[in-house]
Amino acid sequence: MKYTQLGKTDMIVSSMTFGGSALGSVFRATDDQESVQVVEKAIKLGINMIDTAPWYGHTKSEKVLGMILPKFPRQAYYLNTKVGRYLPETSKMFDFRAERVIQSVDESLNRLGVEYIDTIQIHDMEFAPSLDIVINETLPALQKVKDAGKVRYIGITGYPMENFRTVLEKSPVEIDTILTYCHASMNDNSLGEYIPYFQSKGVGVINASILSMGLLTNRGPAKWHPAGENIRSVCRQAAEFCQSKDVDIAKIATRFSLEQPGIHTTLIGTASMKNLLTNLEVLKHGITDHEREVSDEVMDKFFKPLNNANWEGVEVSRYREKLSENENDVNLG
Image (cartoon, rainbow, N blue to C red; front, side, top):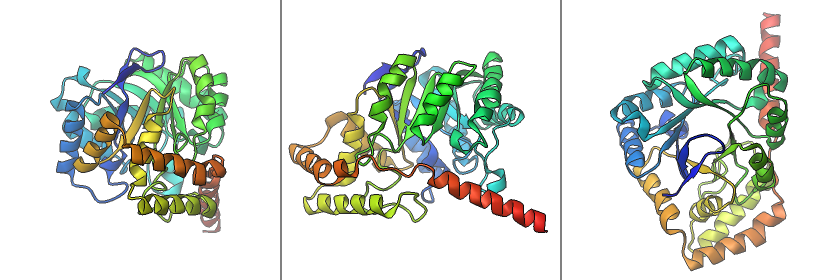
């Protein structure tokens, strides 16, 4: 395991971060006892940063971690969670108001069984009614929580890359980290274009969802995946090509992301012991010469022509439409 300083913080973090979304049974039904064993194993094998959120399993992920973390000395790990995204009902899903943010931090501390959180992050800030709310209300509220000693650092997360620049430039409080997902993957490596900017700001970069939420797997993405048919089709063809060469696309995709420069830590989410050990094996030993040749072929044949195509705006539009429908139903009622 390699370690590096996360931006300008005092955190020396492992190159792989444990992602807690799977602990909330977000992707499949999970065994809480196995989840406990997986997290314990990850910490013992040198992964020293854990990332979670109230949204993951609607508090389940934090509660499962609350069963585990008190067993370890607090200095054995860094702990990140989030504010802003909460419940499955559209009308209750997001809340970026200062009052709710402050309340959310206290709730997370209680569920996690810890006295402080290392980095508190704004969850998917593009879903706020306006970035102005994030800048003028959410971030100042987090500064108050930080001043109270409940959190050590402040971070922001989201899908649209340009939002990070907007918020970093306008924020009245110091932002220490950004968490971006699906942008340092074989099918979309646009995060690389922003690395020099983040470095100039001294911001820690956390990369997540290296398999692009299932696109870079043999089973493919779930029906709800926001990618358009063009992206889905290219990823499907790439996976089939890999299979014809006796290569697992998920393995070469994992290595591809782990090798990208300028990223301080890559988030790997799993509630499976087998998957945890497989990812650590790729981190430690890399891939074979044959797998690297296939990886290069896949990039040339499929992903470079895709030219970092993404699904920016799709999820936000769906959310706003549902929100509008709900409001209309209330008014009609």
